[in-house]
Length: 240
Image (cartoon, rainbow, N blue to C red; front, side):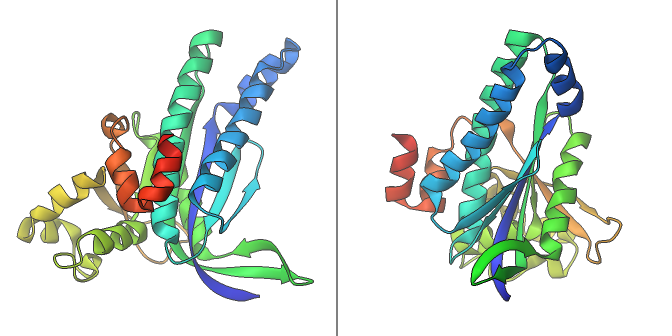
């Protein structure tokens, strides 16, 4: 086994069990086909962004782990592209079948342990995976926020985009105080479509979480951000 820096994305389909049962009772495969497309959408997007990722399916949810030098930028780009794709898929499915399925996405980064057997990776362990799972579940609390981002990835991207201004980890002090003394951070955050929500204490998580919501209204205008996150060559593959 070995420790690696990685970024985790967890997505989940809401109202899965009841919807699955109703369609099975009617012998209708439409929801199964939707779930198949749900899986394929994740893999298709991830494969265009990075060759250095791992994933696992948990029935109504998926876990993606991005590795490498740009793990956090890749994970965030994956998240916003996935948000855009799933929004379209869910809206179309609900309109066609008069259903109310939805989705949630959580993302953050941290250290994980790569578990090996016979020289091959078979799973990953790490507190960050548990944290991201809890972040994803919190999307249920926000009616129009399907994507929540943890402070580690927020810090990573802000330091990368604004190295001269964002020179240190601002979460060493209270974030609200930082916003009052450095209000330009609000505009910098808006440039990556993230807005601060609150600091949260969760059972089983030692450190408090600073959470940011993704602005759904900006999801139709993401090309410039994707190019900054991924570089022109990779972004072009996504736009084509």
